[in-house]
Image (tube, rainbow, N blue to C red; front, top):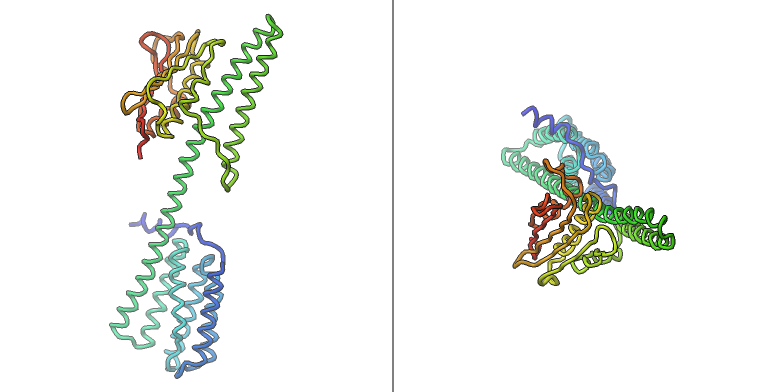
Length: 379
């Protein structure tokens, strides 16, 4: 109980309380007009000028009810309490205006946008004012019950809307977190692949420059091309993050783009084999297969010792698609090393689509990455 009490008391004010808008000005204007009209034409109203002026004090309270909900509630309900005290002290007639029902809006705003501490203090003050008003008007049990139910309904309504807004904000934060994870995975896959290709070309260029200087120009051109593609893809991702309006998205690469990864005039040589009907895969599965193959190839180029050949094999097997990326490098005996960010990202990508991924030494030697994904992405 103490934990719950501390949580309510120190609960921060929601961050979704907007500033004074047109609706607030319209509400305040309608209230002021209704108060003036009622103060002029209502028969039997005691102390008409004073009651009307005091009621108009709710106009600034209605304008600041979102930004300062406790102050607005204290002002609005304080006016109601003052009128009840005057009625009780001088035994005057009816000192209340029907337009003072706007206090219910201030109570709603207190629970909807106030902090935990403000809700406790403001609600206690409202209860005191309501009890004083009931006593001053000699209300019966029926009025007491009806008024209490009305106040509880207002509080419950505000609590429900506050909870829904908080739930929506938490869902938005979760969506943003998932987008950040996906972006980090895409950046790692894209940048790591291109940078690895640049590193391989640079190493080859160091050897070629001493033996065949005329081919060094070709190596430098390949490095420039890879660097330009890397920079273009990174700029595209950053532009998506910075621009709120729609941008022209290029289609994500898929299985049909895997043959572009093959190369026969490099070490290690890369072979790509596509088998089965692979043209009608779900979009997320198609893109995931390309990214998984790209990342596995990047790891093979960077980490496989003495590898001369990397094979990328994709084949359709009924309702699933199997991807195998293997190399003929040398593996050291002993336990497998801890997976890095690349392998963790690949595993997450496969699991998000309802598939699986395993990586480790192949039975025939070298390293094997094998992923099995459903041909149709899960809902």
